[in-house]
Length: 143
Picture (cartoon, rainbow, N blue to C red):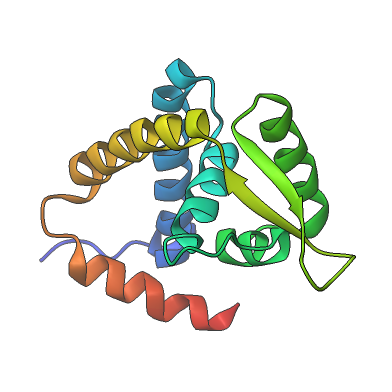
């Protein structure tokens, strides 16, 4: 019978934290070749995903989908706009809101980055990650 672990190593949260750090560092290294950080990638991918039904999402919707705070989202979106990957457009009925649209260059780069992230996920989590994904999704209820 294996010895029981004690201290921090006994905590699933400890290992979840460390696994997330390793995953993020690996994603960071792989996205570097595209000139993206994981946060920039998440913003681009969220904007693209939310626009799949033809309506450009608001900056707030992208922030919520990405799990990012408003200040950080604003800074990242501004940098992506300066690179020509994202366009901010006035909202049709809310003067305080902005809609985000991927540019053609942004769509192409995001597609490449999604391929990189999918490959990492398969290497990191295996070919059938559904059970882990479902467990992690349940854990987000504490947010």
